[in-house]
Length: 201
Image (cartoon, rainbow, N blue to C red; front, side):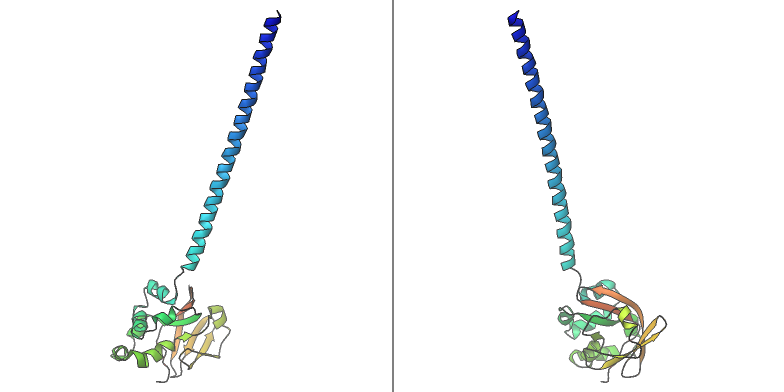
């Protein structure tokens, strides 16, 4: 009888220990699963932050942004000919009033060819006349009605604001409309204009 009781006690103890071991395994497994999930989440967050940071660092500069836009082919060609590409890829910030391809095409016949034939002369003067050595967004421009802004070339432009329309008057007396604004780049901003501004040459 004592042997039966002893055997029964031993069996109960074994079952109890087995149940405890099973609980410990489940707890350990649960903890490991949670740790793995946390590590995976942390890894994904770190990867996303790294990707975002890298994208910000690799944002297009003024020149690359103009090329990607597709409507400034003549302007980017002129910048290359005048050896101004590296300048506008610099730290800046710059504001560029960018004439469209149609704006250059509207110049008197032969004008563009003449300018491209002398890239370090009048072409450079005209191109730098379209650049302001600071970052000026549309919200800033509309506050400048009647005021002048100095360009990289040295001559000034007069800002005109009529309701929601903004135009620029160059020193030659031409008034050019701003038709699109705030195309942002890593080193400045581009505003699109429908004509070519002319300094006194």
